[in-house]
Image: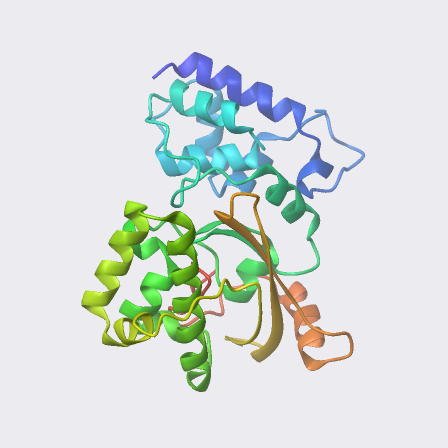
Length: 293
């Protein structure tokens, strides 16, 4: 691992980003043109001390998850992201798979501008890549999950706690929608081993999934009406919209409610409540485990 080169690269990328580029306020007392170290740490979900050590050329080798988070926080393009992994002496993961996937720049740019509505970017297998603060407040802050469990579709059919975010009477609808969506993704990906392995594992572990899969319903989920159970605000009725990347491997999801509705009022309250520690379950929406904080 090249500590000094990694440190220099991180600083150079930090210096070029304006706070407004990532949705941060530009105060009159800023002494740097780019981001502060603590701001990068906040955007990447790291401690300020840990990031400071990296920029000083010290500390342990960062994990692939940390590098992926830094690539998103620093808005690195694909080549820059690969260079970051190279400097840290980590294998460069595929650009489109799992929680270390590199977020499509166009989707990330839109996410930066969605500051008044819950929004997040997920993969086509419903693995969360990045979310804004309102999404974390609505469905729980993402946490590092590896393997099949990183997919919310997988957890939906294998972990009963994953369903706690939706009212029980809505579960059959979500089951059908998730399976039809996965059928469409499997068709688009062809013989992709990740999808083939997930489908095979789900057929073995869930009779419900197997039965629905054999119905052969196929439909990408582009929009949906959802009722989300929030620990402080109760059941919130929202519309969920999806914007797909050009290759279909990533989606920007955002949640809205018509003006004047109870859902709209609850979203206003959500922006005040934020991500205070009010969560009690382990449910999740579109790949985000319900966690405290």
